[in-house]
Length: 268
Image 1 (cartoon, rainbow, N blue to C red):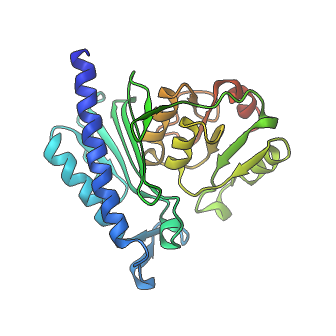
Image 2 (cartoon, rainbow, N blue to C red; image 1 turned 90 degrees about the horizontal axis):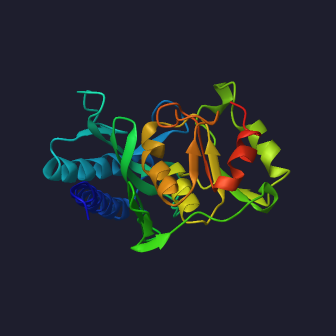
């Protein structure tokens, strides 16, 4: 193993440790969130709980101890100032799928992605209620609980199961993804709406769903999952087929044979 690969493996181990620490915090709160402990952010549907904050603090504590030289950009409290264009930066979602969590549905996750500038290096998505951890580092493939996984071999939309989601502020946006859903649902085998973009991407990487698209996302939603898909042999782009998916808001991830077909149906 090269020195670079060894360093990436170390950072991946740190990310798994942080994700598991956060997952343990979430499970302490799961099923015990009172109505007055649930707030909202930019939109009434965009929920936040004390579990989100506690999970983020657990992640930040692990990262600050293990890699204090790295910057952190997390969803709730921490956003370090940018020091250089090629800095090492963690994108952290301490609870992706808060609505599911509040309603005691099992499809929520913790997501950590490490980037140098715009280049993904490490990605970990941990689903504590499901007991699953997806992990990847650049050039090292993807594992699910230590076992290698890969994207599906699906070659046609008519045979595909896709996943998607809808923005919190959908009533006020020009493109709310409903028309895209309508176009796809008439052609594909089926569509799933799980409520956690990070987990959707992890399931594309594992071949459980054949493709995923969504609009109006943030970097912490996609940073880890995008690397999982690429390391699993899949394709990731923005909705125009370009590379502006980390901060551009729109993402398409799928098995390679579906990419062109999916792009042809997505409006944004």
